[in-house]
Amino acid sequence: MAFDRNVFVNCPFDRAYRPLLRPLMFTILALGLTPRIALETIDSGQPRLARIIDLIRAARYSVHDLSRLRAEQPGDFFRLNMPFELGLDLGCRTFGDSQQQGKKTLVLEADAHRYRHALSDMAGFDIEAHGDSPRQVVAAVRRWLVNACGLQAPGPTKVWGDFNDFMADDADALKADGHSDADIDDLAVPELIARMQAWLAARARPAG
Image 1 (tube, rainbow, N blue to C red):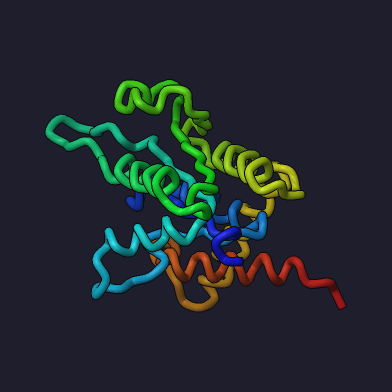
Image 2: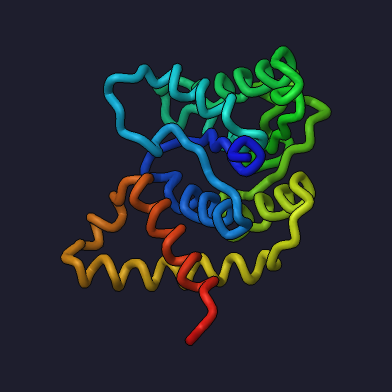
């Protein structure tokens, strides 16, 4: 059932977050699950909020990264999309039907205690800290999914190594197809997910 394999991903979509987003999605895929993210489709005809609500409803698992809440420069606003979507997800889990009430949630932060300054109501939740390290994102997401889903999975060092192999192999393939380094960095999320899926499927195929 798709609901039981889907993982809703709530995170920043800016360039600065890409080094964390790529290994996050790869880890989900490497464990045999499906990342569901607002950027997976480009549809100007559907309001973004409606698309996010549909994705939340369609996923038993969710990963929410709150590490980019704080404004970076004077005059900037706090970034509220991530806690807003976390609230939608928790509301769906609390007030939804029996299926929705079985949802499971991981909250990520750079520092395990920093979120309390902005979201004191989250005190008591298990928060995984990644320290803005891509490798720690792999370890935190893998550890949680293995426990939440009851999965048998390769260790975090293996997943991290596979991710780096994918990035190197994919860069070579994309450059051979005429992509520049800037093109590769700007690769759309749907295309990136599809390439990750194809690479993992090829690695899983028996030789011969």
